[in-house]
Image (cartoon, rainbow, N blue to C red; front, side, top):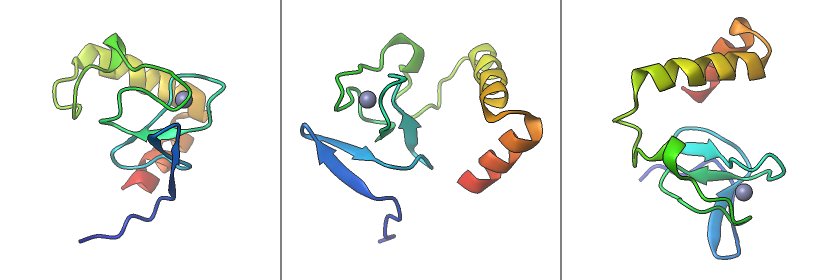
Length: 91
Ligand SMILES: [Zn+2]
């Protein structure tokens, strides 16, 4: 059994994480600091993942949507180099 490095806590009965990583995703609520397991559908803040995130494990993601996400990610990260570093940090 691998130990989980990420700290998790329970908020309103929902397991949330303070850091992103493999199998985690950021809450869609911009005011919410939590990261959630990809299987968690509703965040502690009440944010509900819906149409944009309907793949249970992300295996059936529309490639066009992926490209859009990648572009957004690069934009958010502040450039392709920074995005690459972030991705490599995820493993
Ligand atoms: Zn949230």
